Image (cartoon, rainbow, N blue to C red; front, side):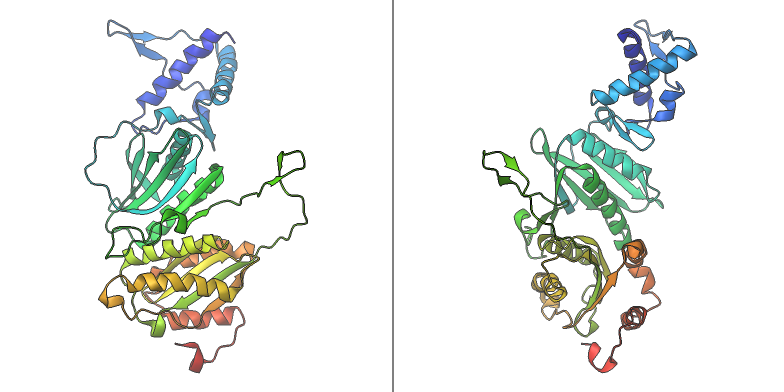
Length: 389
């Protein structure tokens, strides 16, 4: 385990990373365990030079120790069956004159290179997108068909503070946007110690967000309130806990089911705005989606919020913002009523998939037929004379 041998094999790792065409900075653990690295370098005279290697049994020991030290020194991050090397993720990006509009951004804190690199690798490993272009602080993806573009960008505010912005190109369907955004949300929720979602909803008549970052940001994870102990030290409060986990599927339409929400881009911005509102009242949203005349919301219900208050809150401000979109939206209203159904934890995934595929579902089924079916499924009796408004 002489340092010179560990350094020599580490150089083989670097050569292997640099030779990858995708610039992801990723190395499968199996490549290290099996010694599948690039051992040939180029000498000063331009001729290839083969690295001297240890016997197989000794080489395996050195490779294992090298892997441990790379992780211990923070040079790489383990993600699944791969090691991600943030310093080798992407290349320098040329100057961009015009950036696409931001759909949603996240304020993140921590090791920004690690956060960004592991997120890019997570998306690249998914079966829903293909990596198109990768730079040190931005990545462009396309759908599997290759015709729709989406991406993300890291902006550094300081050494450990930054923003990750998410954008979509023209033609990206709402379902594709939902899937892409959910991958990012889930990854940041699981890897960031402190991440804030900054939902930006931009009225047509104004270039500024309808709500500032303070108005629409909400913590992804829970926060622990600190209190002062008698000796002045910070400690978590010791008190009995009241715990609850209530998952709701809420459905409501525009008034008289007028198709105000035909514009897919407008729908996406509206849903993002609604997600920020839910975060602010402690009702963590899992997914919000819908079509031209109604919305589905899958979220947790806070212990301190009633269902009626949740629906009232998530309708009110978006309704006001919709009226600011132009003369065509001056008569926008939500219906007075709503449907709210409790969901078991084991069924969340199925409901989430159902909501994500709303456009596909409503090619064959109207909102009214869908709502009747949901009520029957949950044992709710309805009177058609009064339920539609």
